Every structure is written in structure tokens, then in C-alpha cells.
Image 1 (cartoon, rainbow, N blue to C red):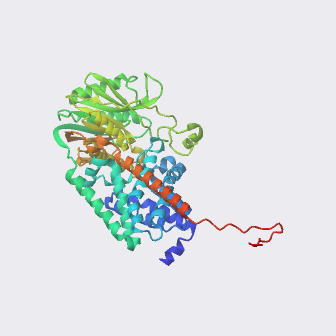
Image 2: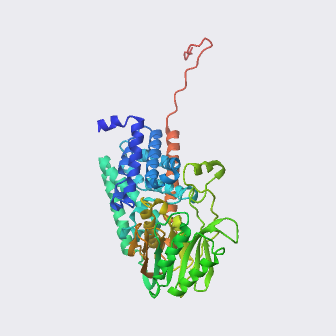
Length: 524
């Protein structure tokens, strides 16, 4: 330990260690998908933070760890954004600087039992505060929230129906804090064990008492995934391939056909020939087709990404324009200042336009669908709103072809499990090039996935469920509770500091000096 402490005495080595420790949780996410790793992934970072020599150094270690976490989570952006990926990681990583100081304050030295008990609720709350800030769409959205690493764990999905992905993040951080205390603070093992038991009890209670979705129907939805198609005329050739694949669905009694994001590269108002071909496909298959148009609109200025429903008679008039755009990918924040990003990567040359509101579509036979586009599926508030509006099935249309050989397609597809479990509604994740997947109302996978090497159609028998989950009813109560915990703790610390200052003895008054500068002698 002395050797390790000596090695970490170098600020540069300590910063590198913090960045590596912060990056470790990414192994719990797809593609590695070591979900169990999330239960201890923060422990090295916590141990480093608690031994920081000063509060300022702890904040810096928190920043470096946050940088490592953000860079590892978004490393697949490097081919597109190049150096700007490091800039984004550094900016977002700063959100963990206060958390670093908080860890040292509560766990540094030899913490008392009461301090450890407080740390088990305050440190998870501080982590959620950082996740809340970075979840703002302008900062990239809630991609890679710690709780979303549990997308394939059935008890965790049940917890998500109670408190959303936020509750999973809170409990995971609490678990890591308890393990770190067990490792490093021998005298505080009782509250640490109590924290582990409380986490296990919360999970068990959710497993037993959280309402399960009651399946009351079934729907057959087909996903059309054309695969990677490049070249100058890729728009036309992609449409031809999608048309070819869709015709294979004739006679299969599907209720809805879903194409991926940017599956149509032309405005259908400008290309009536394509609209007619889609209507022909709808008549041949007996199902409406939900396509995604990425083009300059003919009826209003600007480029939009829109989910458009086409029936046997042509365009139905039901359209959803994407509301939350990907920073740098679909628009440049503060373009006058950051427009240079287009010269060093594949940032958007022209800003896409935003839609104004979510849309619930009637896709026939009383089936109501709620479309979202691309990384909108990362936002739990969007699926919660659509569920409250009465959707039967959630649909995400995505395209991750730019990051085909990276971890991005798997990470994106996994989000559907969380959104389905939170809302009690099945979710279809349809992509151009994979990974396409479907999850039922409890978050469990339905059917097989279409991987990044597939150019195919897949029909899914999807169970439908209704009713309202606690998360849909009560919303982000976990976040609100975390903020109240932080506020209450900060207020308590302020009161305690004030009392200590008032009770401290006053310093002795300096002796009175004479005109000659020597101390005056009392009594003379």
C-alpha cells in the first residue's frame, strides 16, 4: 500500500489512475455487457477519491474520472468528431468534480458510523445529480446512465417499473459505496452490510410487490432492416432493397411494418412515385408502413427527420417530426462559436429542424403507436409521456450505420428494454443496419435480434399490456428524492458548521502596545 501511495503521489499518475478508474463501468454496458460488473465497477474510483490528500485534489480526481467515464462511454464517436470527442468528455466529466469532493468528505480518513450511513444515501444522490444535468438534451442526453447497464436483469427491470432507470443508478451507486467501505473501512462494516441488505431488500420487495404487466392482447409487427448500402445513389438503392424485403411479408398477416431511421431519403411530397410504391406495398401486405423520412420538406423550409405513416391509399397524414436532435450529429450548438467542428469531423453541415410535440398514431384496428427517432429512445420522459397519452406500443426508428463496427448499435438497442419495463408497454427498436430488437411490456426480449450483419425482415409476435406502472404514475420521484437528500444534507452541514464556529473559544486579544511599541504592563 505504501508503494501504491508513493506511486500515486505524482499528480500526473494520479490523474491517469482516476481516468482509468472512471472508465471501468463501461464494461457493464454492451458490447461487453458484463452487467454484474456494475455492482463493483465504481469501487476503485471511490477508493482513490477517499484517499485524496486535499479536497481540491478530490475534485480534480472526480473530474478526471468523469472524463474517463464519458470518453469510454462515447469512444465510438471518435471517427466522427475526432478531437471534439475529448472536449465533450472533458466538459461533461466536470460534473463529477463535486461528487469527488463529496466522496472524500464523507469517506476520507476514518469515517464514523454515522458518516458512512449518510454516505450510503448522499453519494448516490450526488451521482444522480450529475446524471440529471448531463441528461439535458443539449449536453447529449441520458446516454450511458449507470442504471441502464442492467437492461437484461429481470429484477432490475422490475425496479425500473417503480422508479425508472434513475432508481437503478441510485441503488448501484449505494451498492458500490457499501462494497468500498467493506474493503477500506474495517470499523464501519456494520452500516456497509446494512446498506447491502437494504439494497437486496428493495430489489426483493420490488420483485414481489411491483405490479406485473397484465397481457391482454397480441400484435404482429414486422421490422425491415436493409443493411449497409453506400454510394452516391444509396438513397434509391436503399429504397429498392426495403421494397424488396417488404414484399416478402405479403400473406404473413402483419399489423404494422416498421422501417428504420432515414429509410426514405426524399420528401414524399416531392416524390409521389415513392409514395405510390409505398401504398402498393401496404396493399400487398395488408398493413400500414411506418417509414422515416430524412429530407428537406416541400411544405416548409428546412430538413426534418420524420416518422411518416403510409396506408393502402397513400400518405395517411399522420406524421411525427423528431423533437430532440443529436448535438453535433444533427445540429451544432452555438454554431457561430462551435461551427469549426464541421472541419474536424462529420458534424452536421446544416442544422435539422425540430418538431413541436409527440404524436400518437392510429395504425389500424385500434392499435396506437408512439414513434420516436434515434436517441430519443434514451429519454425516459418521452416514453412516459406517450404512455400517458394511451399508446399500445412504443417504436424507435434508428440508424447507427456510421458506427457499425462499434459498441453503439448494441448500446442503443438495449435502451428499448428499459423503456419497455418503465412503462409496461412493448417497444420495437427498428434500424437500418442493426441492431434491431423488440422487448415486451416487462422488458424481456421478444424473438431474435437482427444483428449488424443482417439484411432481412423479421416478424415479431408482441404481447400487449395495459395498466399503469408506478413510474408512469409518479414519474422521476427518485430524482426528486435525491435532490431533497442533497439539500437536507447541505443544510445540516451548514447548521453544524455555524454551531461549531459559535461554540469555538474566541482567540485571546493581542496585548495593548504603548506609543513606543512595547507591550503595556497591566497595573502600571
